[in-house]
Image 1 (cartoon, rainbow, N blue to C red):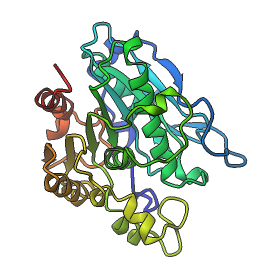
Image 2 (image 1 turned 135 degrees about the horizontal axis):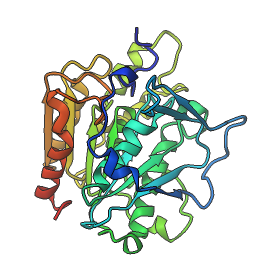
Image 3 (image 1 turned 180 degrees about the vertical axis):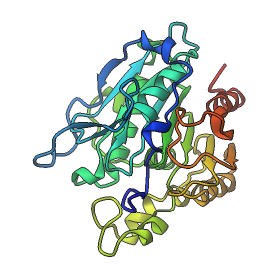
Length: 320
């Protein structure tokens, strides 16, 4: 049975994982780890300890849950022949942990194998007790875009071709970033923070956007993301209520049979983006469940969503 408290980001059983098509090609590439911050914008919660928990039953396949991050980072996969585009992968896990291998490293490596600089973001989790609540991961996402943009020349990246893709809770963070890239969540620290945090394309994949609905499903007295939020704070972090006129193009994916975060979350976001006359492409698939990433898609209609994202990127200028 699925734990009701893990409303976001739960993956399918590890025994159902399929090997990635680009695993062999990507295996030789060791990512470069890049610290996100010169100094953290807020104090580290007492007793916080970074932890990886292996969930896979197959010794040949890693499926680690990462939590307790106190020094956020980016893992950078550099393509052998880059095309100038970049993508930052934001894993899900209900803001309790991160599905680090299947929704971060695998995604960044898949795109790097296709000429797109891939980054996997390890961010701070609200359930770990950070005082900023949902502003804490939003600050990390903003900083990630700014940092990649600031080092674009060094890494052979076009600073106006940086996409963000996120899954479940990471999909919420992606959509939240696309809506609130201009919201100041921290005091600037260096030259990178003078740059825009706006991604050039946002791809929330099975995102959780309807926070009020999710909060109503929580057990009585248990807050959604580790602390109580009033209606004003919840509305500010509900991306479908905050889409600005200058939001980036959106690419949306959801499975109709998702048992944790239904397609109404994506549909609400799509309607809000369309209302702002922002380009949006939406894919609703009959089957796929929740947490499929790119591992759990063999034989399912959702299998080609990454290729469809690249195709959409060509229409918006992200891929050239």
